[in-house]
Image 1 (spheres, rainbow, N blue to C red):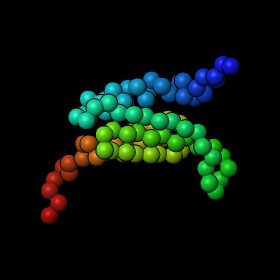
Image 2: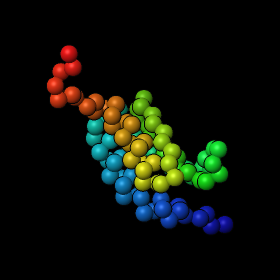
Image 3: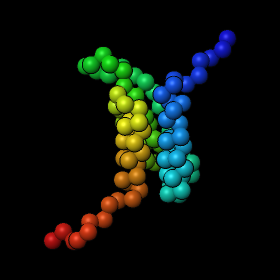
Image 4: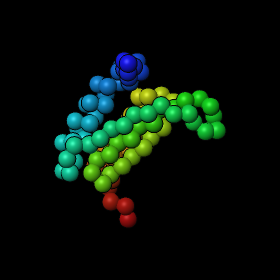
Length: 93
């Protein structure tokens, strides 16, 4: 029995996942990160959504979106925000 390959959208987005995962692995001192991509039904809407999980050591982020690229960027952005907090340009007094 031949298992089907990944969906066409995932094949096309693989370069984005690889690039972001490589950048994350350079920032994260705890080792290699894990990325999981699933297609799920959303609730209450019956339209399918993409669920992307990024696990980097003790950091874990899950993002869901109908657009695969936005789901990937959202999940990675949550992890990057924790690893590299944005410094304010001026002190908040």
